[in-house]
Length: 137
Image 1 (cartoon, one colour):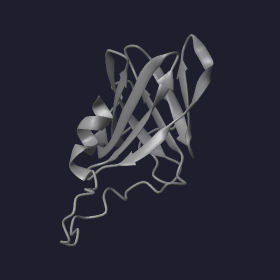
Image 2 (cartoon, rainbow, N blue to C red; image 1 turned 60 degrees about the vertical axis):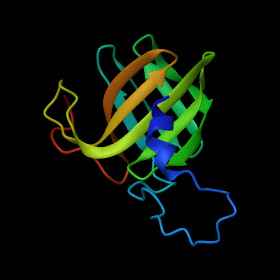
Image 3 (tube, rainbow, N blue to C red; image 1 turned 45 degrees about the vertical axis):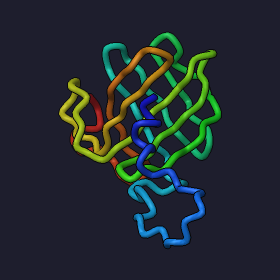
Image 4 (tube, helix red, strand yellow; image 1 turned 135 degrees about the horizontal axis):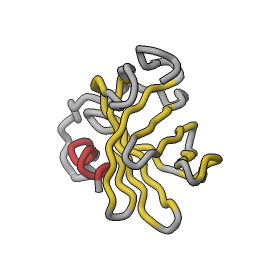
């Protein structure tokens, strides 16, 4: 799963070693209380993450479907996991300039989404870290 790939390197060990853990605490670029707005094209999809809930939208479901998610902090970004319509839902959000290919906007985050066996790619911004470029596309 996509979030599993991102998070493999940051799992805390529970072994008997008495050596202090000197690894960094993980990605801190998006605060837990920030709202993450994400989306992609071909097919069109999007939504937002607020607290422990994610709303996923498509042109066929404009109101969206809201699911409970778990948030995971990796060294290079965040992972979110849940279940959408009986399928596993795994999404990673990582820093990096991203273009949706449809507007002149630049987003501060890239998104990789896995729903069941289907993988999608998109962009994201937060309520505190907006995209740059025109408001209307």
